Length: 211
Image (cartoon, rainbow, N blue to C red):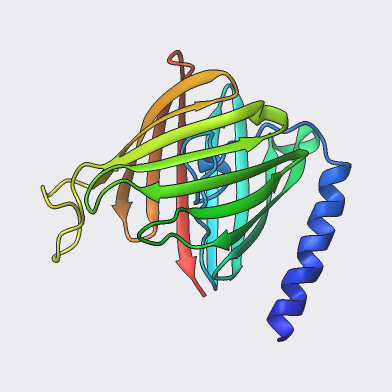
């Protein structure tokens, strides 16, 4: 009960902060663990999970910290740039329903001044996973994406092929087509590489742990 009250209080504060926040430079992968490259998914961190990310996006250094307070609620804060020129913004995602055999997972979120709703669904047992949504701000309306794991995790750990588990990503968001890949280097440690608008190289690293 106490954790629920804390979650509600923090969520209200983040919503209020979003109403007066600065311009967003955020991207989902580089400001949190639950998304594609720039497109959000309906996934959340999960309860008692901490994620720290760093990314280099379009000449901007981005750092964020996110916390999963409940299985369906994650909150966080991001910062574009360092020092006196840094611009901080709130991050919030609430999953309204989980994914089932017939229905997608659905979540709503806030990223600085941008609001969005996202749905995510696996297309087959071992196939790609599709994501679609609609948002304001940098999302500029409809966004969509797909991700595909090339080498699922083996029982002994790592990828089935002996290489890090690799996920290919393609998306359309903010009027641009982006593509990239995510590499699970070690437990909780991921590296992301992307080509934004099929032209600008971006990179990021994230670390996730339970507490």
